[in-house]
Length: 139
Image (cartoon, rainbow, N blue to C red):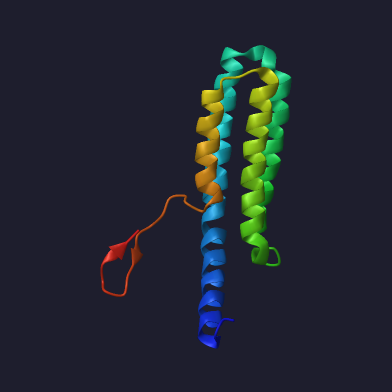
């Protein structure tokens, strides 16, 4: 059983993690949407016959990304920002995977896209250096 001090530390850690994810999730999800839009334009340029599937997949990605971003702005949902962000990111990865399988696209592109998204799901978007107690900078 956790002591009172351990419980306080765990609670503070959970609150700080939520705050950081709420601050970084819009950047990560927005970046994922921009990359998906560029990839979609390239896909359309090379494979115009895939337009309907591309629009379906990209439309679902936009909906998931925008819902994830909006959830960080709504105070009542901020308590659930981590599961919402992870769900949005995994949903986008699922959209990419289903699209790649349905159109017979390259597995390499699918792995690259999902690798980038896994960083967003873990909250490892662009980070600023964090000052430490001893005056050094940690990242």
